[in-house]
Length: 114
Image (tube, rainbow, N blue to C red; front, top):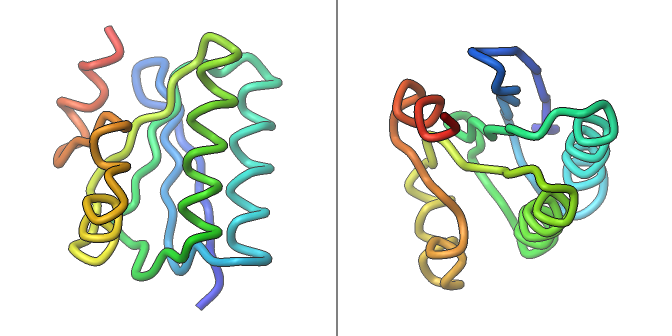
């Protein structure tokens, strides 16, 4: 299943609802372009809702790190929401879980930007 990305705005925070697989090729490229596009348009509060992401590979992890770094360099921030067990396990295994701000519910994630 390919990656689909839906964008919405909540209290000044851009929420990207991701669904599918973040993998080498199309999925990771889509994610990269979506985040860079948002930052270039002035969005500095980006929340990735990963509740529907059923698989992420090393390329997808690389894109998350790249998004985080790109955002930080542009005075923006990328936070993660609703990690599935598989994605959470991979982030913990690679120690990336400590790099990102991770939230289980959208309300507290949105509130963290204030």
